Amino acid sequence: ILRYFAVNTVLMNMDSYQGNLKHNYYLYEEDGKFSILPWDYNMSFAGFGGRGKESEGSSKTSLYIDQPVSGTTLDQRPLIGKLLEIEEYRNLYHQYIEEFIEGPFSLENMSIEIEKTAEMIRKDLEKDPTKFYTMEQFEKGIKEGSNSQTSLDRGKRQPGDMGDGGGMMNGENAIGLIKFVRERIENVSKQLSGVLPIQGDDVAAPAGDFPVEMGGERDFMKSRPQGGRGNPPEGLEVKMN
Image 1 (cartoon, helix red, strand yellow):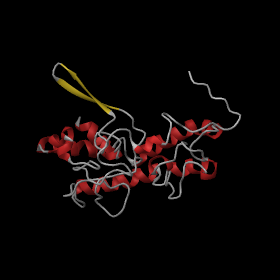
Image 2 (image 1 turned 30 degrees about the vertical axis):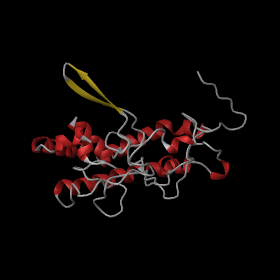
Image 3 (image 1 turned 90 degrees about the horizontal axis):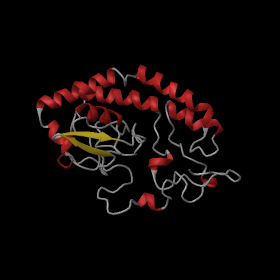
Image 4 (image 1 turned 90 degrees about the vertical axis):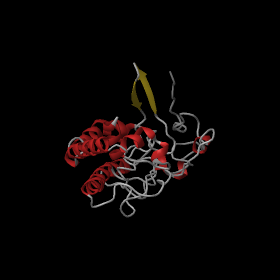
């Protein structure tokens, strides 16, 4: 579980147990031993729009490694909070973070993986009439991103299309993948070396536009059909099995 939280923290996946919605995971018990089963990682790389109290400037890649929560406190997240209270576990957690950013998450390794994945889907994406982004935005999103990135031309969108209702899906807070990896490694490295603080005094800021306390259906979902991806282009028949 320390390895899981180390990776999730570096990825800044706040659409998780560490975020204000405290979801997208199961706890599985067998013979008195619990395992965490996380899922729904599509908002990683700071894609959820939120972060904890920033440890440096206004960067979207700043999140305290020893206070890796958003819109909540470590007391309210005992799966990570209780572990970090124990020096042995906290040191091991830091070790896993360091191994991750120097190994699988290194800029060299991630650059190769990102380009390999982009190349695999690029041709199919070009042909997709229902894609959320233009190819220009896709290419920018791989590298440095764009402050003006939006999911679809607003004049062409219909109510309920993906992109309505905040910065989570519409790319307004978009940061390119390569830029995120580079800046996140730098931020985490400075925290591990003591150049930047690893924990703050405040409750971490809530993520994006979402309220800390949720009651009933999430507001941002109300204007969108369940599973809604908007209407297909005119003349395109979509069959659901």
